Image 1 (spheres, rainbow, N blue to C red):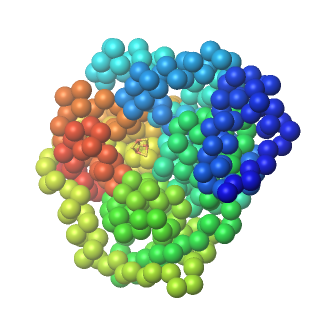
Image 2 (image 1 turned 180 degrees about the horizontal axis):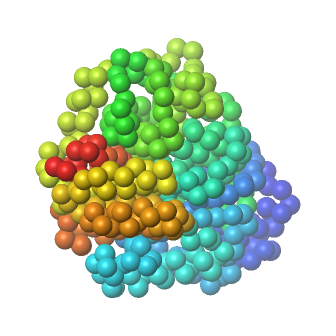
Length: 394
Ligand code: F3S
């Protein structure tokens, strides 16, 4: 039985003294707190809201947002958006259907009315939004949640779109789950010391396989000699896609390391990696290669620009990223290099949340274990999985 205590201010919100939108939002938070046995609410420093693409929220979601905005909802903490269903500037060139674009603009306008920044990225940590270790936040996108908890050491549960928005409007979230020290414990140790991880696709395949075996356990990796942020980003995103993993540790690399006594131990060797990669890849030649799941950093875009300047890919390709990073990439000349090689830097959206299935593609390439999970289910795509050196030139 939960005995959730509210502060005076929280109680006022709940009782409707601070408006209908705050009351509606506090009701969501209180209901969640009761389900999970929270004793109190805890202030948050930021919120990341998912449910931005019209493709995923549909008419019902748009109506809900417009209604909340009309009731005067305003966010209390810095709040930013997950990717939308299209690039706000290039949607026509990208063959996004016009009916879809109109609805997508309405969704973004409703969020903006509430004071939410139209960042439209799943990698806010690459545009300077980096909560510190121990900071409490309410983030919703599964890969961003994994990155915030694991790589930055911040604290967030895996929020749904409505609960992240409610937390943003009230400035608090129920104190349970990954906000508490006692919950941040790994119960699965994965030994990868016999397996050399060479690049993003290897980390993606590792995450894809470990997410499946982790189920509700948080994994702790031993034997990873080095890993940069783009590799950790893909590892976390892929585990979040196959296993809903919101937290992982990597020995000597992530800021926290807390393994339960008697944790289950598994060995993941080079044959397991080979098998996972083979299982994910259809072996087909892609019509479109999509890079940046989660959204690419400026360093990743530089690498792609250098690679395609040396040798032109044999298919169309997109690099998905935040608008702020696209602007920086354009200034540095990477945009021009990518366009000259037949590609495009795509901002505000990604291969999964845009209506790819309505744009004439059926076989899409990726080096991300997460995109490999969602492309068949949400976009009716066959997946070509592998290193960029492979899929761009198949
Ligand atoms: Fe981001 Fe889209 Fe992948 S939201 S994590 S690029 S599926």
